[in-house]
Length: 94
Image (tube, rainbow, N blue to C red; front, side, top):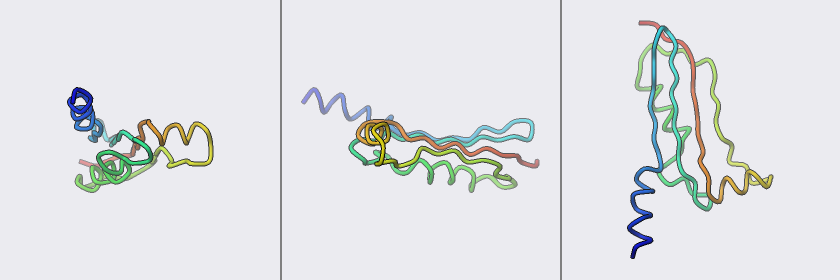
């Protein structure tokens, strides 16, 4: 029972996304906890992309995202328990 009580808040805090814009430059980000190949609160790429779609006038310049890599030791370990993150950067007009 104690393990469930500790795990539940972890799962609630396991994912976040947001966007920051200043001086004509923006950065959108999303992170999600991965447990045994399952992204606990949804796909980080989709969450970051939704942040960008919701704000008009943005021009995407770069996207960086954690791959779902099952072909290397580090990739497998990151998919067993790890964090996937996506960052989208670019410019905007006011």
